[in-house]
Amino acid sequence: MAAVKPAELLRRHGLRPKKEWGQNFLADERLLSSLAALARLRPGDWVVELGAGLGHLTHALAATGAHVVAVERDRELVPILRAELPHAEVAEADAKSFDLRAVAARAGQRVVVCGNLPYHLSSPILFHLLDQREALRRAVLVLQREVAERIAALPGGREYGLLSVLLQHVAHPRLELSVPRHAFTPPPEVESAALVLEFLDTPRAEVRDEARFRALVKAAFSHRRKTLWNALKSMPGAREALEKTGIDPHRRGETLTVEEFASLERAL
Image (cartoon, rainbow, N blue to C red; front, side):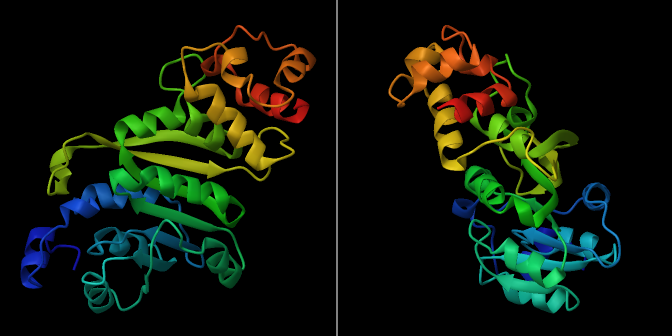
């Protein structure tokens, strides 16, 4: 199946890519092998593929000997996956809400997540991974290059933001492969990259209330030109927290490290 081009496979089943679903199928075998290698899978591992599409990456993941759970919400593609990949477990479900904890419980281990994510759904899926991170060991995700760079960005730059802080708090992100537009069918309008997230055993810094931490970081980045004090003053206890931690209220959110955000949350 891996050798069949997406356009041919779609034509064979009388289908077309759903533009409104952000379907851009990746079928470059060299790239697919490289993505599977980044997952560092061994026989006995479990891997969940989010948005399995036509099964090209599924095939590369299955070749590692790992147990593959292929998640796909498009009911027209699910029968193709089941027919072409009888050894993979196919789940007709939404990647934004798929129960990764249940898979980890069945596997008796933390699982690896892979996926070529639709660009317009990348943020909701990333937040879903954050919510279920204790079930995850690693994630290998094809994203819009700009989003991948933002997640891996260091404090002080324009790319550094909400997702940078929240994901770096619980994982070590690194940018890997560039994925050119022509590798997809149909080609997207933007460049892509593979992002690897290595989930930490414990968060980088102690946080007492996860929801409050997210609200704090979101507020700090909601108006990037504002000082911390102006961005946070509507939060109860913000002035006292800034004084207690010794963080200059005239700084901007993009200059704070993950550890500084965590210390502010604990002081609130």
